[in-house]
Length: 191
Length: 191
DNA sequence: CAGAACTTTCAAAAATTTCTGAAATTAATA
DNA sequence: TATTAATTTCAGAAATTTTTGAAAGTTCTG
Image (cartoon, chains in turn yellow, green, cyan, orange):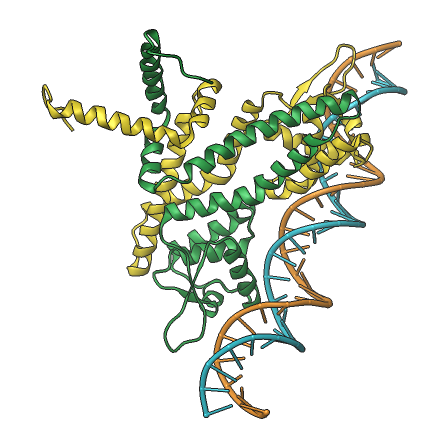
């Protein structure tokens, strides 16, 4: 591996973390390298920088593309593929959230739905189904929240995060206003 | 494996998902089994239910304990250990979030901090550091939000989730009120 | 269409992770 | 303290994942 020390440390760390993040070492290293490179890199430059085989680079880039974590670029009069990591960190966060949801949550949500459709045979299964229903409910609430929040523009999303738990103060204020309004209602609302 | 079909399907699914969730198949299966069992189970019952070795069960329970995902129980006049999964799904969510943060985020946050302390050698490192700084900033904003929100009682947290993106309406309303107030301020506030 | 430049595929080697059985350890009981 | 019951450890076996090199594929150029 042939990199400036600071970048090498960064790349090696991403390689080590790779397995915890559900990607492998090489994929982690390549992503790290691309994300701090000012220019797009071609496969052979990655081979040189990381000291790994050409085929490994090819497969790992393929995986990064499946994750939507790298972009393909082309230079005029050069038919090699060049790769970069998108440079908007918020966009990267969105992509990561979307891909991890797809891989780690959606399959379970659909299995749970399926199992909850079945009629339980005996008390053991009946109990199991109630636990599955609780899980399913929680996951659904979380994914609904996520689907909703991901639509926000970055600026609003960031504002929301900065507010943190303080939003509950707003909620309290809202509750107060609503209950004040209720005290002398003009008419009842249905449902 | 010797389980009612519904439970078996659930257990097998958690086993398959295990690797995507950063645990292994056995750990996933044991957790699934415990989470739908009405009574706590002892190690040998798990061996019988899942058809795996006693030592594997022992190690996997150890890992689940490291994740804080199982509880130890005891019966009078029986010195075997019995295990259950906590039954509050919100508590499970909190535990999962905490443990995954510890394993997947914190190490990177601290490496980034370290690398950002160093003086960059040359333009390449200088550029790399700005990208690292962006990453670090985003992760910090997210973890600050998380630290804040995790303190909420479950009821409030749930309410917040249900509100979803609609909180932004509250934010807009707040902005409006604040700007109205600013239009004829009694006095300026510092900072 | 032959050759050059580049990329991908894939079977097998290497590395890593998971799982097991035997032995060691712990702790309660007689 | 010997016996028994339960649990843990750990070296090696088995399974899985990652990496490689060689071959095949693709696409452009002359």
